[in-house]
Amino acid sequence: MSLHPCAALCRRLLVLMLALLVPLALGAASPPAPMLAERYHDGVEPQDYWISEKLDGVRALWDGERLRFRSGREIVAPAWFTAPLPRQPLDGELWLGRSRFEALSGLVRRQQAEDEAWREVRYMIFELPGAEGGFSTRVMRIRELVEEAGVPWLQAVPQFRLADRQALRRKLDEVVAAGGEGLMLHRADAPWVAGRSEALLKLTPWLDAEATVVAHVPGKGRLQGMTGALEVEAEDGRRFRIGSGLSDELRRTPPALGSRVTYRYRELTAKGLPRFPRYLRERPLAE
Image (cartoon, rainbow, N blue to C red; front, side, top):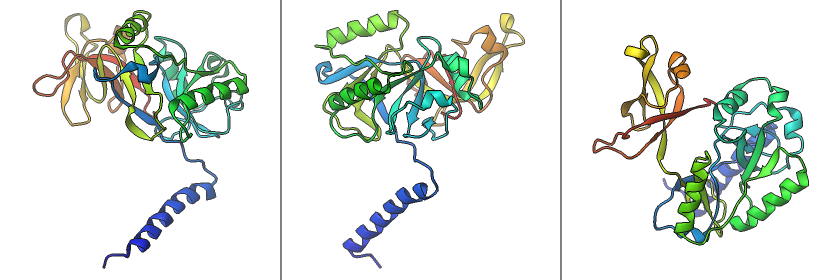
């Protein structure tokens, strides 16, 4: 028997209230949901967006009490690092600087915070989950929160505006030449929404994706006794090999079976496989 519309609405509201109240009753704050990016395309008008560098860091969500990976698992950081953070949700990247992802990844995976190593880490804020207003309003509020905290490790990701696509391409070339990954575009008037949205776009000179390591392919010739390639499985179940981008150190101690790796590629083949995949980095399992 179907429910009366009012009864159905009441049931949905009750379920929502329980979902919110149970974590509070247990003394746990729910991690804020992240906003995820779509890819930039030529139909986008850059003047409608705030633009920032795409940082090569570890995504970190602050729920007002704890620092977490996107998965919800807590990041073990020193108490002095989290104590000055505002009591409201933040979204950003833990960052050591360009081309230092591997060192950062190893640091945040540890179960005990290494005090001195964390002195170099910066928490770069680019979003306020759940905050009201368009992104322009949130940009101003992020700057205010960082200034109020008054600590060097909490910073706002620099946001800027560009006039047209030509200026955007010049900026992309400049950032990549300096060792950066690319650019992020966030629509100035867009409200915050959880999940993937065209209000947030990423622009890089290549495509990237993640896959799971399922096998280590033995090397030959100079690579005898080392890993010649990683056999990986994409989210759609397709398997392929990644041999480029692996250092000799990685070939001697490759990412473990079951680990997640990020790779870059130019385009997809007619069979839907990445063309010229190149290993970029291993992602922390907890992330």
